Image (cartoon, rainbow, N blue to C red; front, side, top):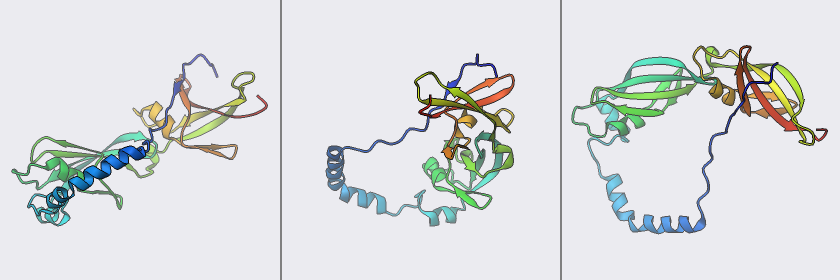
Length: 210
């Protein structure tokens, strides 16, 4: 395989850093200071409380015009739908959208994003991981490419990505398609590149012989 293709590093998702003790103490005092206000605000009954399941059921807010779209990452398809029966004077449409679940093949999801285009045009978007066959990519053609460099203590492994959907983002699929080799599990490729022969994922694993 020619090696003159530029590889793309594939970064893992960011993790949330823990708050320092000092920050947590300050937050605690603020919460205590506004406790009474918060309790009154959050418990006051309102006819348009989007987090009140009974109220949403009374209004019969449901998702309609459901449309499946393309695969956006490993095993994951995008869906959109419109929230129906939203009153014209309802001024918290986005909150209602975020609180209304959508069921795909028996599994409930809350929207990934909500778009407010008016009372009759609240659009929700979902990224549903349903392991649909046309969204499930996998790795083949395992190749040991040797040591990454002399003295690196790293060995370079290459795989070819298969079943990439038409129009799919090869970088996203490479980063999210799991791989197993050498009794090790990887949630996705560490690097990837695209060539005339396809999309390839790259890994560097520990090897003291290198």
